[in-house]
Every structure is written in C-alpha cells, then in structure tokens.
Amino acid sequence: MERTLSIIKPDGVGKNIIGEVIKRFETNGIKIAAMKMIHLSKSQAQGFYAVHKERPFFDSLTDFMTSGPIVVMVLEGEDVIAKNRTLMGATNFKEAEEGTIRREYATDIEKNVVHGSDAPETAAFEIGYFFNELELHSR
Ligand code: CMP
Image (cartoon, rainbow, N blue to C red; front, side):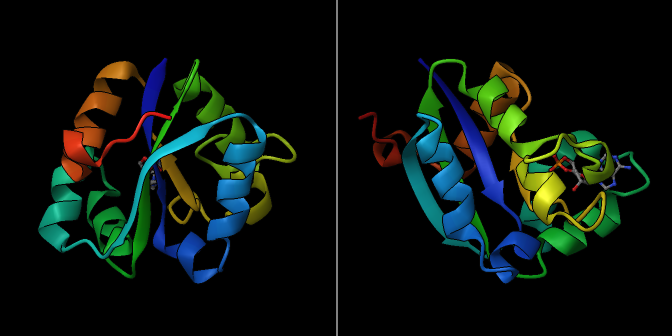
C-alpha cells in the first residue's frame, strides 16, 4: 500500500473539473484517504515547491498556485505514485499521452491542471505539508 499527494491546481478548479479528476482516480481503483480545498499564500506555495526555488519558473509557478483555490488529496493504493502519474500524463501537456488528464485539459506547461508526487520521499514530505496523521483515513 502506497500514498501520494494529488493537487487539482487553480486552473483545474477554475475549469470546474474537480469531479472529472476524482472520477478518474476512483474508476482506476485509487482511494482518497484525505481531501480539502485551500487557497495558498505565496509563502506557503514557495514552501511546497522549495525544490524548484532555483528554477526560472519558480516565481511564476508560485504566483499561479496562489491565484485561486486548489484541492489537495491524499491518494492511496498499490503503486499509486506511478498510477497517478500515468493518469496525469507528462508535465508538458504537448508530450502527454492521449486520454491523460493533462493532455485533455492543460493549456500550458505551467497551467497543467494537476500535481502528483514523483517518489515515496517527496510523497511523504508533500502529504505532511498539508495533512496530519489524524486527517488520513485508510479504507
Ligand atoms: P508540477 O508537477 O506541479 O511540478 C512543478 C511545476 O512547475 C509543474 O508541474 C508546472 O506546473 C510548473 N512548470 C512551469 N514551467 C515548467 C518547466 N519548464 N518545466 C517543469 N515544470 C514547469
């Protein structure tokens, strides 16, 4: 059993596709162990994306992530980190496989609808950034 953090970014929330994204998780056997809607401050977004702080897109990315509410979820299941990344598609929607969330809904390399942890260590950090143990519900 594995856990990963999923975020529906401000563009995804703005496009009214929260349910569409969740449906893809549920129909692929992924369970939601925690979920909430929040609006990040700039410093909260900078803390979350601290690994990217030297990248040229850091300021723009953290502005975008504070531009509206986001939905943060903890997903649970066997091999869920990789499964979620397959469902999302490549970071750049132009390189994403047909039928993936980003291929269908992203408009930009930055405004790419969803985020998913890329490894067990980053998943542990990212889940802990938004949720405490009492908020996680294995089912
Ligand atoms: P995400 O998976 O959340 O991880 C970092 C985010 O930075 C990425 O999705 C995009 O939203 C954003 N981003 C913007 N420009 C780039 C880029 N050139 N390469 C990778 N990520 C980028």
